[in-house]
Length: 164
Image 1 (cartoon, rainbow, N blue to C red):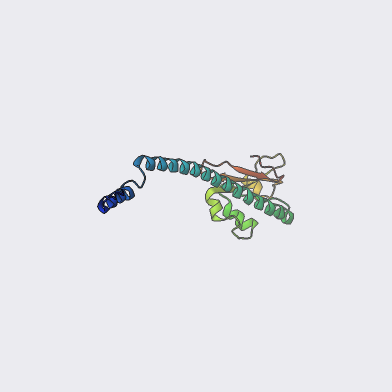
Image 2: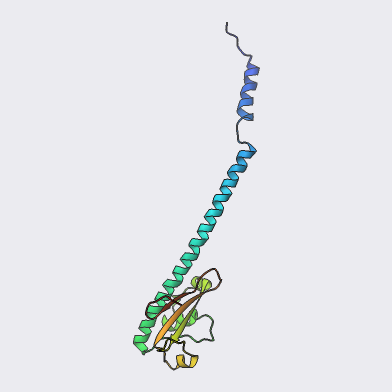
């Protein structure tokens, strides 16, 4: 004997199974959102580390450009260019004097670091402003000082060493 279920019972069972049993529970959604939050926090930390590293590399590359311009400046004038100590950031001065007014050190790079060009005497002591203006610099020290404490100061001297 073949007993058939009335259509209205089949329909109600289908509706119950289709609409009330499908989906996720609240606990499943909470677990997934917690996992996504943890992954996002790990990713954000790694991303900020990459940004800091890339900013330091931009500063190092800018210092290398300035060092090349320093070598050219010395071959033209017989001494190294040095900025005055009264200026906290030599970026504009360096662009004007070493790069003929071209914005080699861009404002984006300047916003992260302030650049200084320090003239050094033969005993590696920093020259005074008077000695700089008298063209007595025999060596130079370039510094990229970070605008916030999260970064380290990047240095480059005329011998190519990056010690500060």
